[in-house]
Length: 254
Image (cartoon, rainbow, N blue to C red; front, side):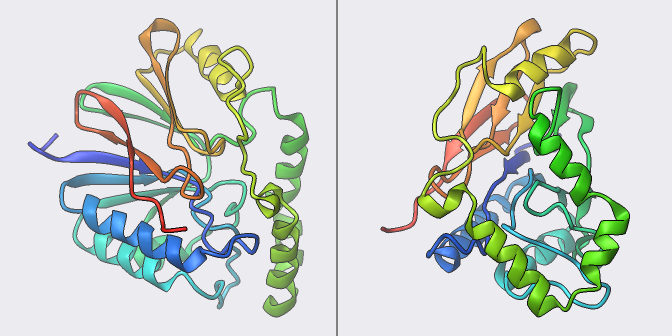
């Protein structure tokens, strides 16, 4: 890796979440973070659920997020790679971000090697045999015909319907995906990572989704990294070519 350059990972910003009343404040804070990390970033990996809802029509996208989108376009234009993993909230990202911003979009898990270290990267939703209820829901959301049907609805109605659905999520009562850490013997993503290690070797598994910042040793000396969220924790991970570290960014004023 170029001397002094780093790889950054962040997830679960949930921009535009109707259950939260500080969306603009959190968006400005996330842009502040992007401005900071772009100074020494070789690449930035956004690990899913950056938007609380996103659906791309052929000629329209959801209103808002102009600060974040503009900053990501600027970063991509400067030659820094930005990778975007679709999460369970922004699963309907298609070709707008790659074509307009230059972002590299991943709809599935991604295996890569950085400075001789092997990485397994994904948002984390629906991996392994554990979250069976969501697996069924994900099949519905990724069905091409049902996506086509949804796109036939007027955006005012369709996006309003989606935001109403989101307002009934666990965010609506101040909770997030991980109200508490379940322990390494019960955390699905930890179990999934150790299952993968039975057949493949990796140095790092990096996920979002659970909203619980974690840096846990796995089998074979691998590590499970969860980037946390930008709702309660305001955390991110950084890899300097040799080590991975979880970091805290500033929290918005109450």
